[in-house]
Image (tube, rainbow over the protein chains, first blue to last red):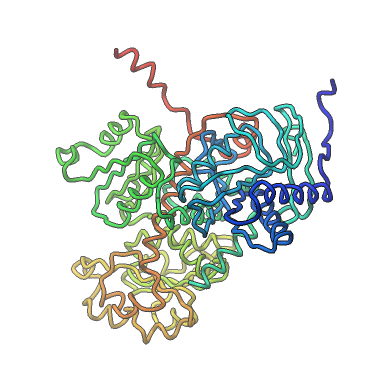
Length: 183
Length: 372
């Protein structure tokens, strides 16, 4: 067992693009088109991913779907010193009542973020349905939560980190698997 | 307002996500006593969190569970409407339990000392005390003796840090970065804790601060050439006794409340004369930039330090200051009391990088068992 391996690239730019394109198609297939759906990206990297999915959906169906941004720091049950002081404005400028809301996040891990996101979303109204799209599912769930759309399943160990980089924020598109603390 | 949203949007696009120095400093902070121990980066982190809190205030349901189970005590030895109510509202929106203690109606009336009152509150397992006190230094006194977080909501003539953060946030949301802005503070500089905290905050953010008032209401060490040595934070501060000269090209005009007792104390010949010489009216305001912001920490004496026409005019952001006050105080309450339940390697790392965190609370559970 090599305990410490160097950073490994899980997805490159093209692979991310293909994964998102597939997810966009799956969303349309499952929901029978773009009618009545909304995308809500979770801060921080879920937000650009949600925008890209919306752009793909527009390209395929010619229909605009509303896109929102959600910050869940105030709803977390595992706030840590490291993360609790960076908050981003939530921006959901449409009525989510009755919509099929697709939460978009970069990495699905314990599921606690998603639980918090569902709490947060309920403060804005009662969606008809909540679905979950993630770019990476790395396992180790601590709650009964499963994704509806997955870019890639990646087996990881708990002491690793999945580092998603997106052009809008980091200047490039890639997903790296790194040892914790080596960033 | 369009200008404000443009600035906010730009900020929003620019913001990085990893913990910044400012966020780390804020994470290690235990008290808010004045702005002298804040860095520019830490003030920046407060501003960022305030923007997120402001969004919560715009929701239909203004309630988030962030501080469930936390107890916040507001301990006010001086009258206050906006500061006390905004702290209470901030705490309640974050789901904390907020208990208000005022001078009247509590054991303070029976002569209990500040220290003993605060010890009592601590013994009831509160998480944070917000204190306003007529004596300068009272919050520092408590911070040095208690184990819980203290926020200074105004002490004597010394400091009012949360108001200064509100003012900085309000300026930034209208005018963008504070760096280089000409901010004119007019009025009773001798007794104003708002002016003092703003002086720290604004100079750290790089503003050109002009202090303007009658010579009797300017601290003497400032009049006789205040600290001008290179690198001192107040190098860019100017003293001006002529209000017209002070207002020339101003980006922000902040009028301070003229306490009516000052006339009796002999600092002023008459209120009417003060108003004529230093009152902010629409004619004087024309000397400032066209998009000048008019601010006032409240409560106002309309017709004395500021004309009603200006106070409620197009350039006034005085009411917005009050709204922003709730958001700023939410950001501070959250930063000082948010729970830390799960220590991850991330946590340990960031704790090592930041200032020492809160001292561990005394283990009162064992004491409780003993008492049983």
